[in-house]
Length: 345
View 1 (tube, rainbow, N blue to C red):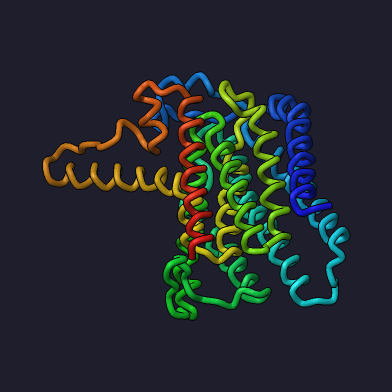
View 2: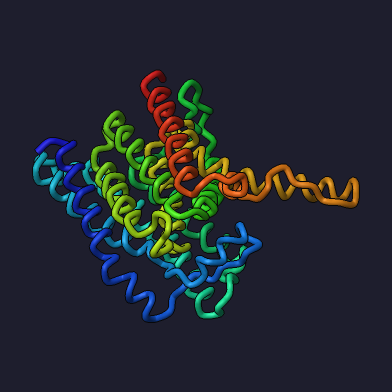
């Protein structure tokens, strides 16, 4: 079987597992009353009607990704007749396993956060400090794994220009990058179907990039996650029957960041992640401008109607479907631009 057939089968299997698992997961979450607490100050007033919608639905694509990814990898390995004694084969497998475990660990942070919110019956989960400490530890572990299994480069690759080797400063710089991007993906999960759709597009783009860079094994992960996201969207598109929760969004954030770092093309990672980056940046701009104007004039002013920026469009009478389609198309455009830069440089 060819590379693309194996990837397509991997995505289809993941899609099927995620879609079917919702048949029992959603009723189960209803039964144990794992509903999402809604704070109206975090979104438009009409989001209050979503109170109690089951959360932690991210388990659908997490489970499907693990199963389909491993199945796809071993199918590819057997079909291609890889030399199992070769160091390159081992390194590729451990990088694949590394991004899977890295994503699962961030998903665990999200699960603890979700469970805490449900148990307390409010929107207060782990503190920011607790999250950052855990994210820093797991990020450092992932970077060390990449160093051990084939990526000893400490340069930042912008495609058209690559920095000198930065040594330990590379890892010091990449840890906040990982934390920012994973939390940016988390912030994108504020409209039914948005985070899943944008990540579906990102994983398709990354699959093409894996083919170009001959990171074939890694594409088993990207296609498994793409299929899982698509299966989850059957339950998450407006009106959502289930939310992914921080369990799902933190898993997706680590997956996007992890794949970008394995490919070691930071310009590509930036472009593929640009929708998420803009989402998080809108919050930073809003808060900073509000504090600045309040200090200067005594009255805080806002640039956007509400942040993250998808809420601004929501407050501007955009439907949730329009936001999902528009942001996903933007992600595809940015991603295609990333592919172009990859081919050009």
